[in-house]
Length: 635
Image 1: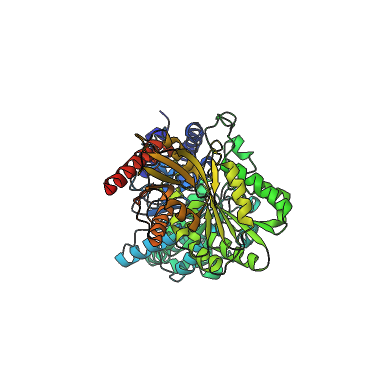
Image 2: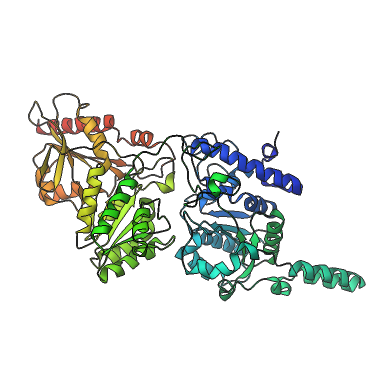
């Protein structure tokens, strides 16, 4: 039996010798490579935090001490040390989440997995400990993988620094990267102290306390009393901390930089921070992908997130198919060569969102703002004002963080900014916080914003071209994964396409199915599954918001309407179509299909679509039901 199998709770770590700790670290790395290579997941970040996570759990007592991870994808080691060692179905239905999960363990606190939130969470928890008089409890925020580039982290730091008594320890896991190397002035400010050749733990505290212990305890009872008082007086040890400039200017104490792969050094620094009693930053230098050669040699992202791979080589088990992101990457690069006013903007995800080729062609025209979506959108409004056309590429779930800026800075100012939303709709294995299912409902509230949803790769290219030529804000959204086969238009009607059709055999049974983006594939498949003599016409609006008058006029010629969208069903495209028909005076039954207003557990996309009533079979049933309602109304 290995050491890992004997670890059932963090307290078990404290019984291990230094040699056993080294063996455990090696076991954990081997386990992660073996298991994550079979399921896919965030491999590189977790290989880099093995010793750091072990040291945190040896120094602090979870769950009494609250440990918050930012970002949550670096919590795999934490799971292993808190009695979750079955990674066989990681990120699969019925298996462990790829992020912290309260349903899994009392040791998990924050499960939203959106970066830059941990310091605010920890500040709130630490304040609560203070209010309750819980002097023996600490809040620990583990922040890293580029999260310190986000503005919310600095808002939290500003508040944390207000109270020198707050029982809060900030562990800065500094691997110099988010997905790719971390960018920004904050990083440059820390660079002089983060170089590996300058790693040290400031030992003045230990040296000072050793001297006072020997000197004062040799002085009899009065000396021993003086030593005890000094040992417990945190103000008496303030000079042990290093001036880190950027943290010191906020009044925060700082320890580091510390070798993030030395458990001994980490424990000394964390113990010092724990015992100080006020807010302290512990700066640990780690290496993303450490201990796994394919990850260490991957200069792009150190195996930040992988699919199924061969553990021996790190090569994918199956070659990656040509996906939505690849199409965007090709097309934006083509447009960039044609139009020198196009600027690419990303928030710490240059390659995951497809801006890599553009950046290689024109490095001065692609801006990585770090994990700062709010800034990316308002900065883009400024670029647009000065005559450029920014293309902001984000994961759809992260648009939520920039809603106010999209509303007030981009849309209200009619800024010609194009937002490309990757991983829109159901992402499946990524879990509740990473489904990009809120974007259409958000977009529907924003005046002057035009939103498009391509049904296939050809339409993605076409809609991107059209968006660039709009003198105002535009949004183009597309899902995660493989691109479906091209769905040609049967005919064009105004500004939309008819992509599927079956003629009704009886009057009063013509149903229009309005399919948003990638849902066109299921809608077309549903045509042949509709029972009876119902006529079905599948419509792809292409530009889905605002609802066009020509689409409303066309729908008025049908007996019923079914809408299907890969987004929240309430307040989305279907709702807007229903409202537009009501305003036009049309009295048609409208059946809206979409994602229910819930946080979805991780599962395969197709499983979730079936569960949420958006499979081809479910669409066919909705069409039959809508036709039946209309026939009964007529009779």
